[in-house]
Image (cartoon, rainbow, N blue to C red; front, side, top):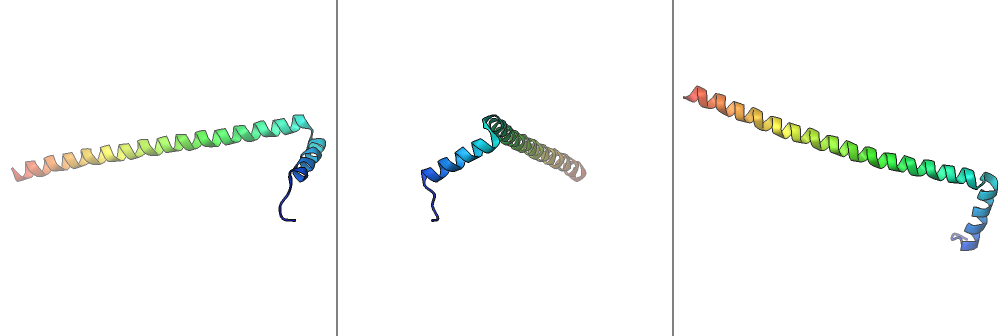
Length: 77
């Protein structure tokens, strides 16, 4: 009772096709695929922005550290 056979799934598929029609199902599939692709692209962009931000922080920290060393060396001289 808990598992469905291939015949159950075929009957469900036929009923869904009769209710919605193949054109509407195709449009739903395209919309869903576009949404997934957009989500993946957005995640890649967010990762790239986070990496760029991290690189700026690292570079900025090294610059400040270098400037601090120069100031310390000048005051000790």
